[in-house]
Length: 336
Image (tube, rainbow, N blue to C red; front, side, top):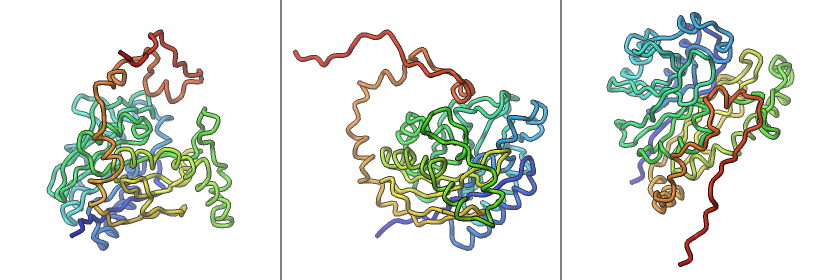
């Protein structure tokens, strides 16, 4: 008998610092998901607080937006609905840790009460936000393990592989991406704001931009590979619309362990896409078979500093050309 799990992922246009509005949208989608029998529901990165206005805030203003996980009024609302509808619900916020530091965090509220929190490993949104230092993988009541990686965490291949090696079957991948100004010549570029402002008069032009090289086209260069190479289902959630001068491209989608898109949205509206995951695909997926052929004794270099590493903010925003030089001896296979 086939094993299936019904999941959903959301894209929506948040309001900057307007928690009440953002939570109202989140709750509307939760109720919609409950009527469809959804068991795991993913919302975007920092969807409770808003995202790209944060770099312009003072430390004090970011602190005001932050909430402690164990006393968060926002999460209290989500936890209640997770229990009521027997659903795992993932939402993004700014966390104030018990250590007093601030984190770009993502909390998955479970139907039986626990809240699993991932702190973004490569936080660059504000100097006051500290990067997390651990992976997040956990069991669920449905016999699968779930991992969380936030936005840029997913771009670094080591993070997804580590999450897979920790046993994740499903990767929840909340983002706020598309339409950013990448310094790489053939990566994302800004989408004209006028296209968003004219979306109801010329929806075709906006759709082309969201599906183009600064939106879906960019995602297709790497996101399916994360699913395929690691034998994971991926729930990709994203913001959509104007976000302090940048156009988030939406493209919410669900991918299977072969990197195939099961469901996706091509809309610029607030939208949820759903799918019944065929869990039987996991065991013999290409990525999982490849993982069994790993040779860990060869991979020590992955754990060594190469000398050119930077903190997340410098790596994200530096105008310097990356340098990948290191004085290392050449490596030749031993022919003896």
